[in-house]
Length: 305
Image 1: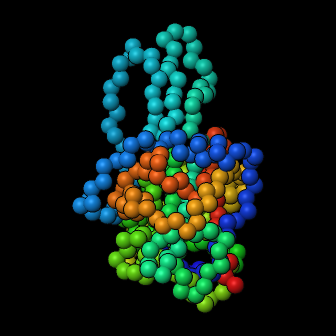
Image 2: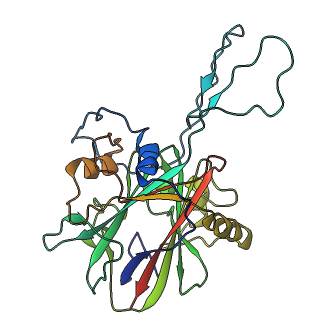
């Protein structure tokens, strides 16, 4: 599958089978959506579409009252225990209320009017059909998307030196479209199926911290300098790590809302950097990793018949 500015060809999209831990779908959905805010952020239609997903700059360290014994919460939702004012600090203090890392995916297809509607990943697509994927995470982190064709060599299709300033940072519950519905050209707004056969697999890799050895931001821009359509290929070590993570069990939940149109709120949130609220539609597929991992990897199979 050759992707250029978020454009690729395929035929049938099927969720890859993964080892699944036994857990109620309602429990998985609730664990993912619990961190969505109750109130919708204000919508400002005059705000220009987001053009950058670069990692945020670190905030200056602020002074803390040394006498304070209250705990603190990190940007990823991990609450650290306060240090004792006397005695010995326990070795390897264990964070409490650690938030499990989660990823939500919703497949949209293009209807006869050019609008986006929720689609069953098992649907058989025809030449000329178009799809896009809406990605949502339950905590801040970094999204990577890799592609293999007929189990061949992997290629990183996101982050991309020509998209979002080569950034891949996502905020919790602020959705991300691949490709974007506000692309400069119609051909860049959908993943379009053609007549070329080939079994494709997309690897969605979500991490709390950037992957070591994978270029993003300026490093990726410099790597692709002067090479339009450049795609970075992972090293054997990086790819082995990703494949190992892809074999880990995930807890999943599905929401069958097929045929329903994408809501204006979802479209605005994904293009203008707004968060989704609890009463917005949930992702069609939600994956939750175990509480002791900071990386979640899942795959989508695209089978061209």
